[in-house]
Image 1 (cartoon, rainbow, N blue to C red):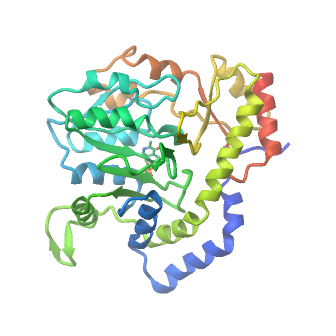
Image 2 (image 1 turned 45 degrees about the horizontal axis):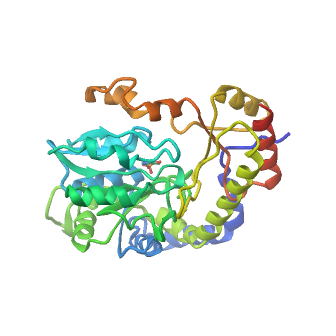
Length: 362
Ligand SMILES: *Cc1c(COP(=O)(O)O)cnc(C)c1O
């Protein structure tokens, strides 16, 4: 029996090999190794937002947005504990303090009902994370943000092309950041990231900050960073963006197949919020018998991953924030039950059936 990998990046490469090879060769021929401006514009247009600023990763994209929006010491920034460390690391890098809010037990996204009570006089921003490919419940979040005059920055690293009430990820806040880490829905052949915004002045500041605070080659208006996207990544992403919609539909099709095949099992399958387009960066099931399911799958040569096993408020890196076990019961409980199954556009239906059978019988 052949092993089913969690994601198979070479299967995707084989479907677009000649396009990728000639795009990469084009970068080498023109020696345009630095800069992803043209892709940044294409991706912003895909999101339905006027400006895009390329970055060297999803992490530097977050820090770029936070820095350009002026977050800093004394500020509190609200986010969720069940995200990748980058969301919180970059808040800490500005000197601001991350404040966690527990998540909705159905979607595992920020629970708007718990948001208001986390807002203080020091709160400057909210960073909803569109976890697993589903946009957080933005209407009530934006309502609170507006009433309390708070910035909203979407961490859309897992939500390329996801939609909420007819709008794509990227359209909801002052800025939204994306990751093109190879394993993400739209993956580069190395690290890359991007910020989109509708604010022209913010876009200009981010462009400048990402490129040493430059206004021209040797004029540095401010001390910035080297957070630029590289040319090969931009070329690869430009090719892949043309296929994104087809891949997202395929992901959704596989998710529906999993839903159907797992309907009779005791596992809880992802719940899709009414009026959203979930793009399934991860297909995450939940079960109190996760260990049994995971080892049965391992035995059947199926790779799985846990996103994420330890909520951030319990990570050593966050111990100075003073949180303890029991502070975010939903995030903590679900961290012990979640399991991400293989899902990528090239995955066969027969493989999905094999995985689902194994989950059901475990
Ligand atoms: C992947 C990810 C990031 C970081 O992106 P990189 O490109 O790996 O730096 C940030 N936030 C979330 C939610 C992610 O999944």
